[in-house]
Length: 487
Image (cartoon, rainbow, N blue to C red; front, top):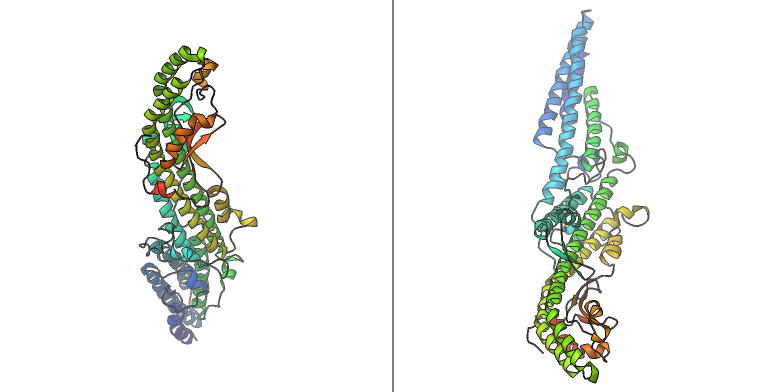
């Protein structure tokens, strides 16, 4: 009897132990839905551990044969049974270690390694270069995404986002101490380190770990480890009994959701990271614009002193006769002096606008691609709002806003008194707002399509809509129009 059992184990052992080896993604030995193939990849460590399990099982079989032999001879067997029990524990421990190694191998080979491979050739879209091909080419609902494809695509994208936000934050120190404009008042407000840290959201990070911020028990690696451990117990049970393990499906091992939760968690974490990156981009854009406005305000304050003084003197001399021709001439000379400064201010604002528009269009293309890709797994909408990329596009990216910088020259209505002039220095006596600015606007509009007149104030300002249906700079702006030739 003992000899037949040992012989049977020796025949079955190689076949059963072969089932410990999980095919690599390219081997094609197991169907994609096979939980062993889906959740594990063999590594040198797991192969070595499986061989140790096989050796332990063979050693135990020999002990059992000795037990049977002693038992037939009415000899004491407790020591052998104790050794056999110890070998069983060792077999299960080694099998579990092999299972953990296979789960880790799956993460490294199917998620981490592909996510760090060089990006493919660009397809000519405006999407980020680090957007994976699977997301880039997704057509929308229909079928489900492989969890490892989601993992590698998410990690590749998060690595790209993290690099980008790190580059933005590398400029943080250059803003500390800069004066900014608050509500068009020359405030001389120097930015503190804490204020800059808040603007750049320094306390928030983008992680690229395959766990994507989920509970440690529900990451892709943790669930793969859970499945592999149960499969290893099944195989070890069968091997010890000289049988073949029963087939398993993924839902038996992990429940109804299988590997869906890590996919949704990856989508949600990417959406949060994408939202963070755009927020930092936008804050820096507004910060740069406010710094530019501060420079304009300081220049206007300084340069207008001479004009105020000259116009006041002229007004006092000519007010009784109602002759304002000289007052208008003074204003026109002031216009000519300010004209180059207005152009240089516009030229300083344009690259800020261009960078912001390019970033918005790029992140919009990314989010739309992710929305199509994630829809295959039921992401977005209803209860799944946490991974709804469409909400980000419709809300954060499409919320109307413009970059605006107010401009000199100021118009002076000395009939209102000097105190009023300092606060409301815009009007020439006896002229409406359009007449005050008619000549200057005509000349500036030829070179600055973005210049606007607020007739209520009246005042001049530069305005660039950021999300006006992908509106880019006009041909005049793109061609570099905006010389410093005076009117």
